[in-house]
Image 1 (spheres, one colour):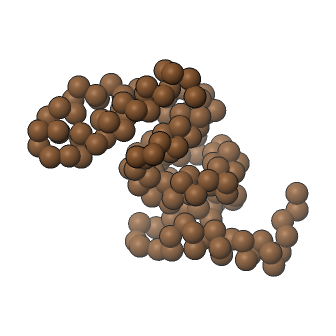
Image 2: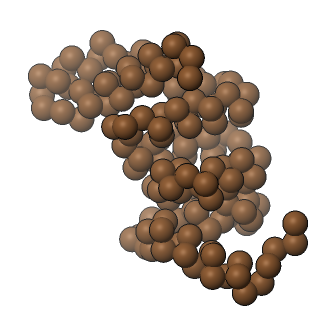
Amino acid sequence: MDVERADLVAAYWHHHRLATGHRSARLEADSGSWAWEAVEAVVHEAPLEDALVLLDALLAAQDADLAYLGAGPIEDLMNVYGALLDMPVAERCEQLPKWAEAVWGSIPPDGLEADAKRLRPYLRPDVSPADPPAKVRRKKQRRDQRSPRAE
């Protein structure tokens, strides 16, 4: 990871810790809002691959808040790119449990489940409590074993 991205990731999670901390920390959080704004700009304005690489780095951070990323940048990415996320995000969910958990924490835009067939097992069908991602992966593995997918 390049130094600039590493600095952004560290600043983003530092801002998040401050923003969700006690009152004095929340008051200090404004000084780090640039990192949140920078991530927001990448998600909304950069090419998809650049946004995915940044999200990879954010998810790889030791102190990553997966629910926060799912309900924030990942959900925003779904709204910006829709079904174009199907292949790259499904592959990440299949390989990296942190991606699967973060995607599970998002609320997909209308129609994404129908259009993103590979990603569908990782999307929470509604906002009510449901199976956690690990259970979904086990269900998907059993389903795949019963009916092998054509490559």
